[in-house]
Image (cartoon, rainbow, N blue to C red; front, side, top):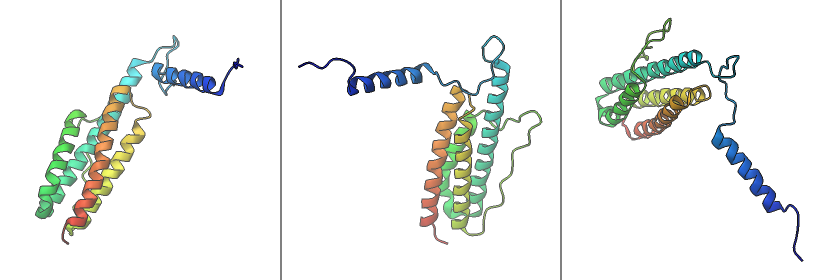
Length: 173
């Protein structure tokens, strides 16, 4: 006897197809500002994107300064920090450099490096984690192109935090 009607497998397949279609067409209704005609207000989106990019660039500039301070204060860490600092420099370039937002604050200067190399590396790892977490949160309001960049830089920051923690374990006091 042949079964007729809706099967569980058919219902799941249909539901999955609808869900995939919604994701692929972008039916998410993000936090964009809409005009009366239903379109996105390009100026508002551009300002928001510019502010997010400038903030991310300031964070990268601050991180780079932290790397330089730790390397200068603790020469034993210089070889391990050089490739990570180079990556942060590339992130800063990709984000447009240390641009200022009109009315924004200048690039913050990180506190001086700790007197012990391990502590300085752990502090730098904590700062990388904090910045990566902030960038991950910013993804929710970023335009698609900037969101992809922020996601990539946040992932790199999380990897840097891990590597810095491991470097701290290997570094002599």
